[in-house]
Image 1 (cartoon, rainbow over the protein chains, first blue to last red):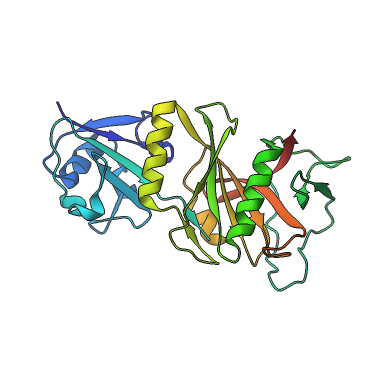
Image 2 (cartoon, chains in turn green, orange):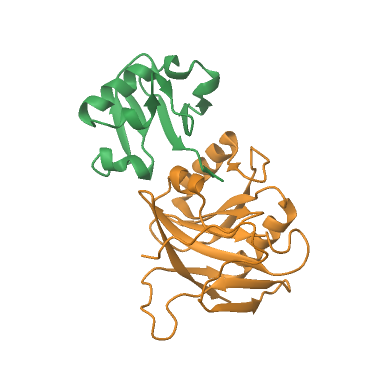
Length: 90
Length: 186
C-alpha cells in the first residue's frame, strides 16, 4: 500500500505521461519528497520555498490541505492526493 | 504564429488591425465579432475551435451578467475528444474586474465530476471587461491546461448592455500564445 498522487495534465511531462504515481510518507511533504525521487522536478512545480505554490491546489482525500496543515497534512496508506493547478488569469 | 498585438485598452474600439472581422448575429440577438483568420490568400491556421452556437451565446450571456467583473467557466467534453459538450459556469473567487480565479472547492467538485464521467476541460473561458479579447500577461503566466482552448469574451465595447462583443480563441503553451479560428456550428 502507498499513497496515490493524481497528476494534472500539465505535470505529466515529469511522470512519463502517467496520470497517477505512488509514494510513501506520513505527511504530504514526505510523499512529495518520495515521488520526486522517481519523478525528478515534479515537487518543484508544487512546492516553492517549503510552501505550497500559490496557484496549486492540493487535496488529501477531498480535503484542501490549506485547511489541514499544508505540507504537514497527515497521509496514510490508501490515501488519495489530488494536485490541481488553479484555473486563474487576469 | 501570430505576432503579439499591441494592447490598446484606451482606444475607443478594438485594434483589429487589417484583419477581416465577421459580424454574426447570434441567436440571442447580440452582434458577435469573431476574428476569422486565414481567409483569402493568407496562410490559414491549422488550429480551429469547433463550438456550438448555444455555447458561444451562453459564454457571452455570462460575461454580460457579471460585467464589470470578469466571468469565468469551462466547457468540458469527453477525454481526448476535443469536443466541448457541457458548459459549467464557475464562481470567480476574486470577483474582480481585472482578475479571475476558480473557487478552489468548486473546481475540485468539477474535477471529481469530470473524473467520474471520463471528461476533461476542453475550453477555459473568461471575460475581459475593459480590454481586448487577447490573453493578458497574467493569463499567459497562469495558463495550466495545455489541452484546452482559451476563449476570451470582451465586453469592453458594450458592457452589460446590448451591443457588439468580441470572442476569440487561443492556445497557450509554455508561454506562447497562438490564436485559432472559431468554427461555430448550429
